[in-house]
Image 1 (cartoon, rainbow, N blue to C red):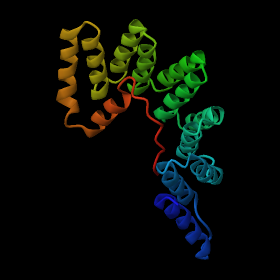
Image 2: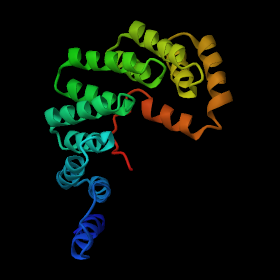
Image 3: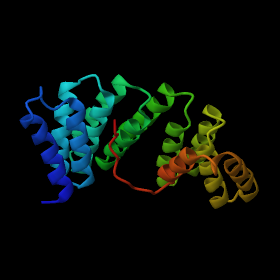
Length: 217
């Protein structure tokens, strides 16, 4: 058995056998993270579901369960859990993004668009949902809409370095190098010393098709 899976199983078993009141929701969530890391998405889903059943109002647990379902191809249940997460915490932006990804995988672009619009409206001072929406349009060849939402991202959050970085990449690749380099200078001035900005730029760079990472507590 994979060493990570063994550790996850043993950590839960040890808590049960110790005579304590039993594993907590956090314990199950941590076990789910280990299963997810080992790509055993069925066991990850089981652990995350137990955690979310124990703490129904914990948005991160619903998000994690959605991530495990999505990774295993169970898109409808993933959407349900992402929706539960955003209902509890509308600021959980990745949940909207991955919910939209599920709709795209199901061939339902209209629902994906509604999801992105809800994310942008609900989080009107955050750049990330508009940037993700721009990526959606760019992947479909709609450069007009893509540029519109890259610019809306900056309007929503002018100090977001990653938003300037994404607009810069778009402009340089689509015939506007002078303005693109200006945006890149803005990114460099605020982004290179900001690890969060670099991480966000990496996550949102178009065509980067990653599995949704679960949330550690």
